[in-house]
Image (cartoon, one colour):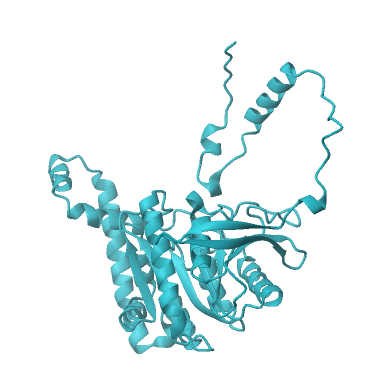
Length: 377
């Protein structure tokens, strides 16, 4: 018998992670439908018993292909840590060596520790195979790190992100003996990694790796679409190189109001960048916040690396926030930047995902020997 019922909630359920809404009405309908057709509850056979704590393993072995035809055996261990052991993560590593930095992976948006499109799973295993232990963990209120008290859930920019990052580093140092660290994250995870590098001056963080950052500074109440103007300008620049777009413009098939708005915004941004560059050069104490914070990072011997998808605004956001300091740092190697071709924001296509994973691994592998004990390069 075929039966179909409609229930509200699809758009909210399928929205971006930070905007999702639980479809309570649809779930209630499903439960009631099942209850209507279900018989009396069955008794559990005597041969079936509930699993005991002894049956539950906190680690598994993973065979990971390195890409050269070789297979590396990894361990993935479930981890509980933090003040009340309220934080959850998965530690991937190939051995017990603590010679190389351990990588701390911060949540990408409101996605849990698997990451968008399982990016964090593949990245952590790849880095572990290269000798970098990698902890992908959930900030409190995200994924399996549930709130200890009633509070907002699935919020990608929680105020306690840096404190949770400190707890992750402390866990890796005390429980497993790691003494050097890299903070890494995508999108809001890049924001968390950046501020961990800035604020945890007493922790041995050697590098901050930001993948597709959308904000360097988040203030409660800001829209998650604040960076839209940068994205729009990137798209318009790409369109200028496409002759078909010019034909579309000639035919009038363009939202001229939106075009004018973007160009005006870009003009204001450029004018502000000139003023900021002047302040950076001649009045550094009044330079933009990002410029001052970048210099603070460099003074601590911490390097900054960005991996940005082609068409994503990360590079423009960096240069708009610290035009002179960022350009000088890019030329001098204190900031490294790599553009990932044909990639979207969350690397939804496997080819781009494989590319960024390989690039991050190669970068850390090549950079690791260049650090001294204080993390300076």
